[in-house]
Length: 245
Image 1 (cartoon, helix red, strand yellow):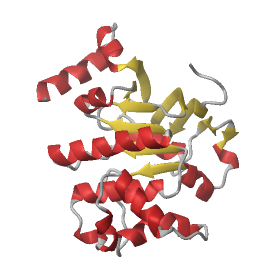
Image 2: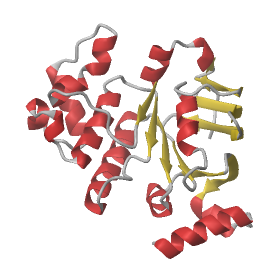
Image 3: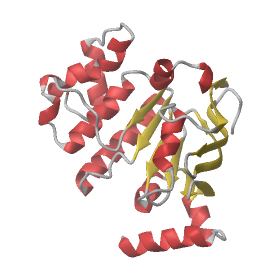
Image 4: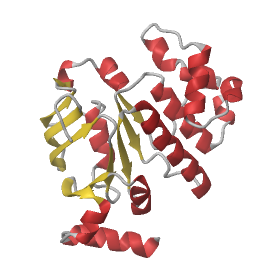
């Protein structure tokens, strides 16, 4: 059940236009403890949508509200603490794992305590013994989980995940997906996961927004979308995914 107090993120009539329309009339809401999967082909505007949500990109028109407060009225630094973004490729700093975990708190004059850092590592399935490892020595999957923990150190209300497993092998993908689901369950935060992988969308088993050419082509559970009278564009996308799977 949706209530005003539960709503974390409200997106209304969001549009972005550069030399052509990138996003057109995007509407959705996200409640605490919910995951929204944004599914669509490459170039459909998925990553751009995430960047608009924490103002790495500025929308042309429309509004994004965080717990009823327009994000335009929130400083970029504060907003990006509340709406954290994990990129497709981990953006880590040279140094130890623990130093990377403390980056966000350090920016606002806070210190990450050792017990807090160890708890963050455990929350994403990394051995606490990793705390003194150099970030550059980690595997790609370990780096992605560290990037996830790094964002969680800021205690975000909303977590944005931009194709976080696209560069990973199947085993590492499974590990990162498990970490994501555990984080959601343990922290009761809102999550938006971008993917072009329909199998991954199925595994997440969450509300799904299908984005095609910058427009919402469908919204609902994936099973409902597949069983409904989907548009030709959606059918073509799903058909292509099924052939490649």
